[in-house]
Length: 66
Image 1 (cartoon, rainbow, N blue to C red):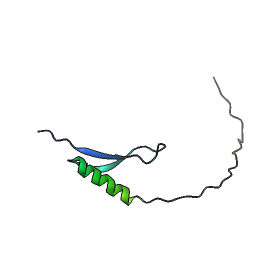
Image 2 (cartoon, rainbow, N blue to C red; image 1 turned 90 degrees about the horizontal axis):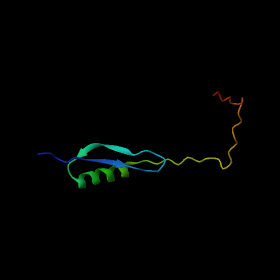
Image 3 (cartoon, rainbow, N blue to C red; image 1 turned 180 degrees about the vertical axis):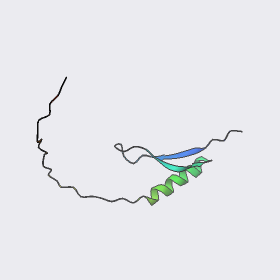
Image 4 (tube, rainbow, N blue to C red; image 1 turned 120 degrees about the horizontal axis):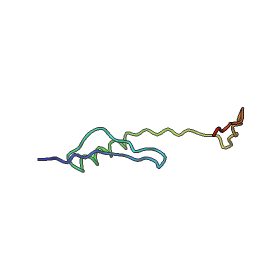
């Protein structure tokens, strides 16, 4: 008998890759419960960025060789 095991993947943002939660679960409800617990444990830190950014100046021109 082959058992179907479920894994849990979470996507937080389009710019970030999927995150796999460790573990294999026998039912979808167990996998969903593990995902909810992982989401509830996430700690978020907000970092302030300056509104104006200074452009970076190139120190030397780039040379393209063909």
